[in-house]
Amino acid sequence: MKEALAQFHAGPAKNSQKAYTIEKIRFVKPDVAVVQVRSISTVGNIGTYVLDKATGKWLVVSFTNVGYELKPTETKSFGNE
Image 1 (cartoon, rainbow, N blue to C red):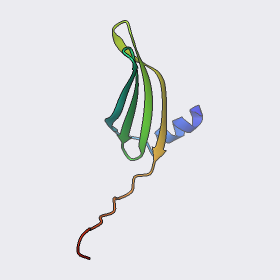
Image 2 (image 1 turned 135 degrees about the vertical axis):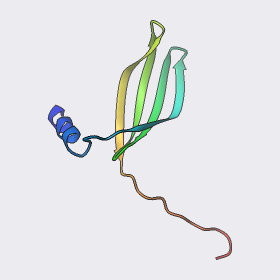
Image 3 (image 1 turned 180 degrees about the horizontal axis):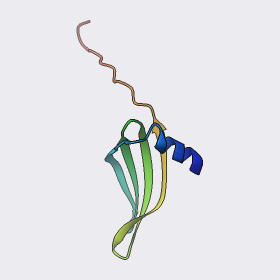
Image 4 (image 1 turned 90 degrees about the vertical axis):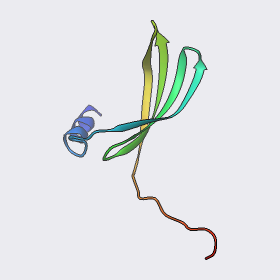
């Protein structure tokens, strides 16, 4: 896994930058949150973070992501066709 990540960052992800958007936040408890984050760069992914508020700061205790392929959106017209 470590080698695959090194190859990815040396190749397709080299010099890439990401834009992050928080899609959802769900507080499981006042000090535990599950956050769904969408990130877009040359590749896209949806990540799920579990955060815990320890010593007054939010810390990531678990993270997973799923890649998706960016495709142009389709335009549809409705009405008199």
